[in-house]
Image (cartoon, rainbow, N blue to C red; front, side, top):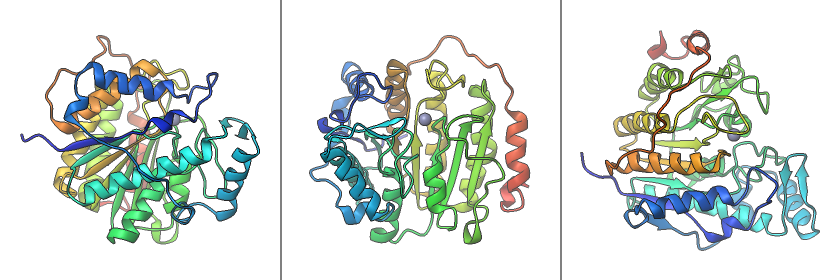
Length: 350
Ligand SMILES: [Zn+2]
């Protein structure tokens, strides 16, 4: 198979938003870049460096203007917390705007045909940030703003978002749950933060059936995620036929993650990425963009980012692998529940 043209979005300023005592710190990104350097693959990638910050108007595609102003004012006044677990620094507002712009640059590169796939290594992350408030380490919802931008600038009618972060992508769900033009799929540990994402949350009004939640019990492993992707995600993707595939890529379902209790191996993420590539090639012409969300085992998430890039670029280099596979819970029942709630909307699940 031919190699794909791939890139990453990265800017040194993404490191300015940091807190030494917080799991969502700059070391996550530094370790990822170091891994790509050490593996000598940086030169195989186009490095997309956002040259400007997203305008307030662009951020307002998703967020309320008073909230955007609040973040700006809070940073300027030296406030250190946006909510209990979301910190601020004097630079946060500007860095978050730069991250949003980085996501849009990824969209332009892929829609313009310069790149097939991009992993946007953005910080701060985004999928918890609601239209009217930041939460869960997130300031602005990068992937949601990119989706609105795809609709507005490129006129896309069907966008699929796969959120494999171990936490439910509450904000992304809420933003799109009343429309059919964005299909949101989230697999997450349940119960866990933020507490939303039940299997009964299937979307509302025109969006009924276009929100698919797979809440999985703690302890599930590779086998469960692969089954879920093979039996639910790919069949639904083939039926929906998205024009673009976006991934909220948090690496915190990894077995050694300090903030969650799933059992995925390093190599599992490569297998999941391979399945998504297969789906994208059938439906989007291979176009897909990954957005960095969580992942707090710094070394493991660097390896996972390398593994994902390796697969989506088809470098065919050796994967970083765990020698042992762990699994303490069977996720089959949870997967059947997803099928039960969604077979009325999707022929592929009947
Ligand atoms: Zn997470």
